[in-house]
Length: 174
Image (cartoon, rainbow, N blue to C red; front, side, top):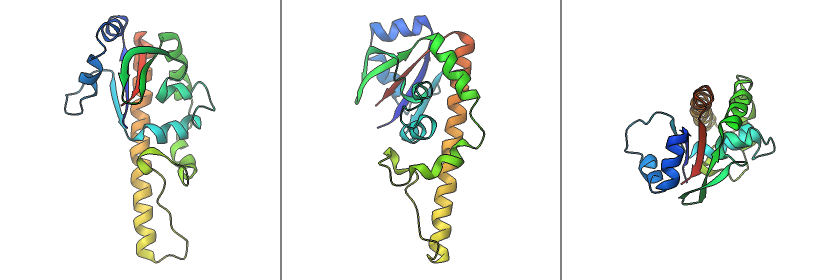
């Protein structure tokens, strides 16, 4: 399962609704860079947990999964794509901009013991574990935090750009 977000102008939205098969062209990982497209990969679920606690915060719950969005004709392997209209995108962008800088680092521990897709946050060891194991676990945790922080920065930029342009955002899990 990979998450995908795409900023959609009214014209791009109409094209996807008219030809839902275009979704698979957008989702092709071998495809080049597409402006307004963010391939979240397996990080989508960890970000959803860390940002919104899986929808507890309804506004941030839209950031990754567009929970309040309208269903589109395009469908991924795990359900229909959802579309957030420009007004909602602006609200999500503002909420993302207000997030504290250390949010991912501070909430990262909340991933442990959850059934998070991609297994983010599952590496752990006891304090009395041998140094080699502690170092490897810490290295994995630092790498995952850095990856999630980088993806969050891209998510914020996507929403800020879409809000500025008056575009909606499509979210889908493939």
